[in-house]
View (cartoon, rainbow, N blue to C red):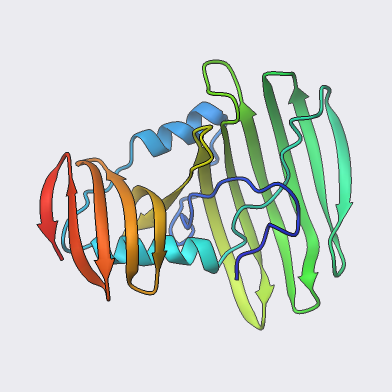
Length: 218
């Protein structure tokens, strides 16, 4: 299930890097956004469907957009917010100006419902020098259990200030920046790999991709 809307203003997600994400921790807005600008994977007929499924998993299996953007804050501070069914989220605003916010957050046995509780945390960077107003990036690792299903997700998420959210998904050790609408084998996604940006259409797990790197069916 996707959590987050009950917590507050969502962030972004690259999703499921824990669905393969590596353990290195991005240090800034620039670090996270650069990982979207320079994905490592090559999109092809052999993995287009797998990338789409990893994207769906990032939307539904993990914590989804989480944490809290405190762009209203103008000074460093720490706050604690109770979760609906127990536990809390603590947020430590490291720095805050009218142009940029840097903060860390932590889930402390935070429960949306009695059978869905999370632990872990991450970092959020909102706007910043040279970025469009409203832009932000987030990187976090969350563990827990929802409806008796264990969760362990590592995410990177970015927004470009237009309201669109991109997820960085990892498939077989390679990363892809993905956005769009997809569910159960059907939809349209924008997928960027190191071989270019593609628009991929899916119908019952088959379809085609067209972009700067060419056109192929899968």
